[in-house]
Image 1 (cartoon, rainbow, N blue to C red):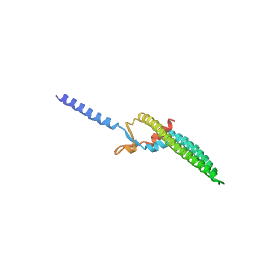
Image 2: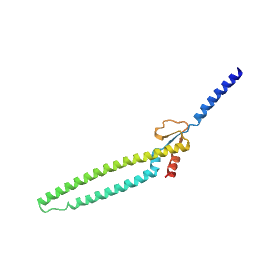
Image 3: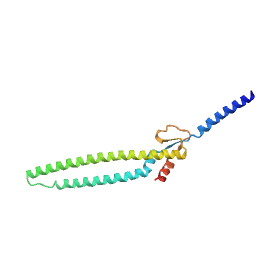
Image 4: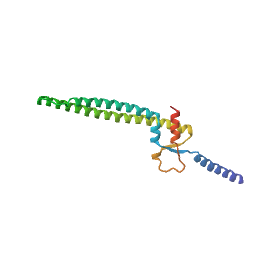
Length: 164
């Protein structure tokens, strides 16, 4: 009987220690998503490409504005004035259409770039978690409370940089 009690206590002790050991091995953490996003080489490449696209659109818009300025000079007859007014309105419409299209295109590019970079970060995040044995790693903004969480932002940034 004593052997059964002893064995029962050993089993109970094993289960309790095993449970706490498993819980103790859980690693929780968070990261600053915006910092990781802006630090990633994917976001930096996309940002440069977007800036080049915006510069190109801006130079085209400047050319259209110069065309508009060339059509404004004085007119000698009412017929010439009417003709110039129509040309100016046509150019204004062309400029406005171009501007709207360029803004829509830039917004579309930003959205696509954001999705692309976030997907890359997610893949890197999953690999980072696996390689560092971190069970749970969440963006800082979604963590309401975590007593023993660690900020892994810098480590994640370094990991992403090292896997380029």
